[in-house]
Image (tube, rainbow, N blue to C red; front, top):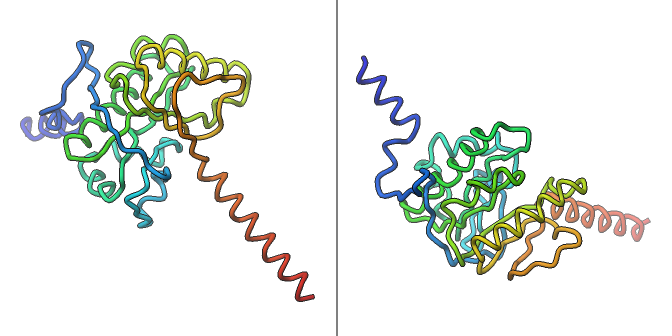
Length: 227
């Protein structure tokens, strides 16, 4: 029974998946660069519906509860994600009011899942994550330099202080990593002049609302013309 319990613990922390993964001196998984540039970024919560395209990448800029299962089974979800052109690393939340060990753990989980997927042959683009200046101590560890990186501004531009932290973190990422290209999901930060090349992707929820609104206007126009 003791051996069975130990085996469950090993699998629970994915110690059995560490073979081949390289870590920093502080234990953060190291990610390789990826050169894929998707035409579109599809939120993970739409993936199980079967919308598959080699031109799409998959993002995790959604609430954590919608993708927590990828941590529990990274190998299983590698097969779900394999049809897509590329996948971003999971964006486990880093909130400013979280204890630092919890934030560091979420950074670790993001890097680890990404490293496992790279080991299994997926094209993985690292996601930038940070909360405040204290998180700069570890939040860029394990990320490749002069590579393609992804970042989201969703929910971070609602007030001046949050927006200032978003700009400060981006400046720090540029200073440390000098990204070759940034995949920006959401709005550009206000009053920010980027010193890097970027491609902006519109929030899928905003895009869907625009599509619904356009469809509604079209229906109304047809109705008026018929009347």
